[in-house]
Length: 195
Image (cartoon, rainbow, N blue to C red; front, side, top):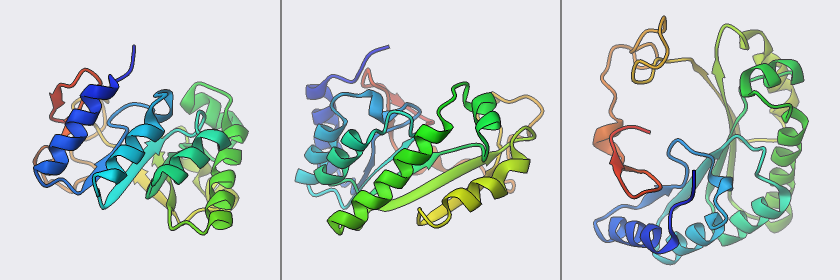
């Protein structure tokens, strides 16, 4: 538990930019809106001329207040991870009854973007499992007019964490490229090979 210390995070963001990084994401396996400093980090990265700043969120803490601040700080892209198309299955998959809350946050993001004339990409990702597969069309019908894209992924075995799912099911036999293309840093400042 805890958050990345602001001076440490600023140092990492600054050093990565000085070494040529142009794109930055604030999530890496965690919910970005838990951080009370998320909007500051976005604004700081924008001040360093990062060309693209994005987050991935489950959306439950992405309140209208926080979304508007993140957009105003310079966020270029937000993807909401919504892995169900009904309230009942959402609660089963996510462990919380936040389905309607998340949908309202997504719709707010779209309205705010339009009102402010911002060029922020708004997407939704849906990771299909046996338990939620039958609800994808429902989610698509609920949100397809509100977002730029709904990305549908089959579930994949990440680092052996899901027995019974092929390690390479999402990559068609190719090895994972993430350790070679991205740098993942934990809140403590440790470099990790995987998100």
